[in-house]
Image (cartoon, rainbow, N blue to C red; front, side, top):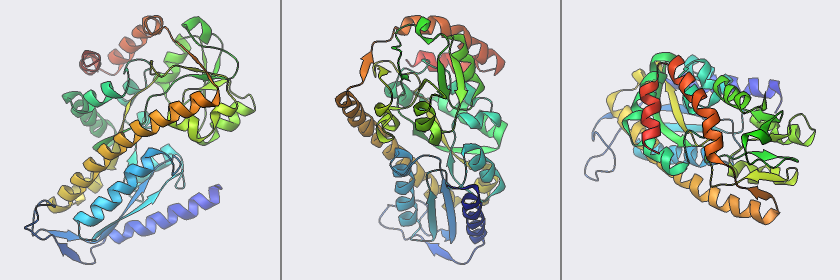
Amino acid sequence: MSTRSRRILRFAAIAAATALIVTGCSRIDGGSGAAPDAGADIRERTIVFAHITADTFPYQAGALKFKELLEELSDGAMKVTVYPGGQLGNERDINESILEGSVHVGVGAGALATQAKIMNLLELPFMISGQEHMQRIIDSPVAESLADRIEEQGGYEVVAWFSTGDSAIQTVDRAIRTPADMQGLKLRAIENPALADALSALGANPTPMPYGEVYTGVQTGVVEGATLDWGSVNSMHLYEIVKYTTSHEAAFLAEPRPVIVSRTFWDGLNDAERKVFSKAIQEAAAFERETFLDVQTKAISAIEAAGLTFTQLDQNAFQTVLEPVWQKWAKDLDAQEILDGILELR
């Protein structure tokens, strides 16, 4: 999509944001117990949910489930418009738009670390062992500590946690088994200093590149590999142009992704609105995580059928190299307790 088209869509989103002016209210009926705070006034408004991934990615399933649930719980007073695929810009653009008020809901990833530095901790490879470990983090006080830091540092309220699945290392012509195999490898990375630091420690050459440009970047040789989740490898057909992937038994990254709104937006909701919003987004996030597990399982089978060579990665060797990087970032972020909590949940 062209920059001009994105600007038009962002202008439309800003116009939609002005619909936050109260035009009426809906009163949630009591009796069924389906919606909290029976009898409270829910004001009519349009909420914009934007993310950078394709409409086939589980983020979209979670966003649409949120739309369905919130519109039902609010008796149609609260409408949700979803913009997938980077229609409103890249992650940094969306994050800034959330603070400006033209977008209301987004999903934080590596770029969020420029505003909330604690996010760097979640981008450290091989620290979170997989989806089960990630879910234990979400269900623990560690998630609350992370959310508190994101609010303090970035001005965002974390309303739920999405999954981005487990990622692996995909390469064009080099099998990855030990850190020595990473030497000099031009590897696509998301825009994040902690991830870049970790890849450099492994000897790789991290190359920032937008999600939507990964296939072309690998195809043209700008990069020699990527570290995508299994669903993305399958949906963008990356298996057509790479030969190797590390096994699904060792997750490169498996970080929880915060679903964020601005503190200003959150404080502007009344109690009844916050209750239905929270109920809808929590249920939608659980649905998104379940969807990701299903997508991941099917994707791994499809990738195996496509003929990629799966290599067994020496996790202990990688962790030995990376543990000092984990500790360095925990110290720099004053987050030793959070790191310890993550590792204790392995």
